Length: 260
Image (cartoon, rainbow, N blue to C red; front, side, top):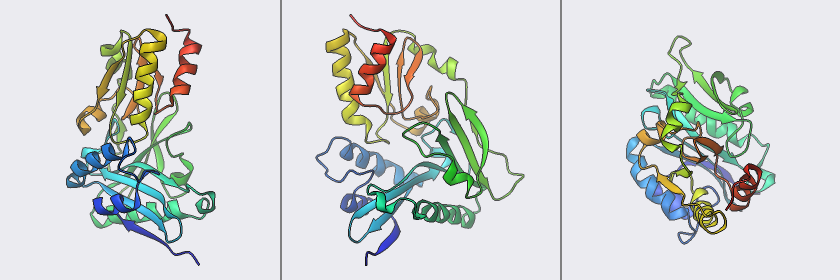
């Protein structure tokens, strides 16, 4: 019988078991994520890993004190969840593992006497949906375009709720010209895809994309998209608000009729 356990992962644990489906230090995105983690653990970042004795890492939950979160929200003293995922193999899905990791996060927040735990969710891809959180006592306290929601679990109903920083249009003003890609090493999926997208933009569309690498949580919290750590902007408009493939980028450009 398989043994399933949840651990609070150290950097060594991540190197041994991997993260987000990445394990090889030679795979683009993983060394960048490791470098990012090295700077974040000292700020209180924590990772829950769902480990299967037979199949290795099959889930994770990443969270950090709100002061240092990489989402464009104000959540002082709260814990903020960056991401949660379960089931590289479908047999691990629907077994309640995400709830188990989430409850460990909530219990830590309670013991630390924090006002609660917050998370940004969305209906679209690349971010956890709200259902996991709603069934575990979270409430919707904010919305942002196109379909992002801010949810919170409060231990004290009177505690001030976190909020999106907003001003999305104003934050887009510096990117009115050409193609801009904003990314951060918080998400390993963006590394390889961004390199391919930039090459495609140059060779196939005659564009010189501007790449903005977010270096700290302050920059991420002022990002022009609710995702925080990724977006692609064309002429002041967000055309991708989560990490996308090179193929998806081509489809977007075709739809917008952008070309030589």
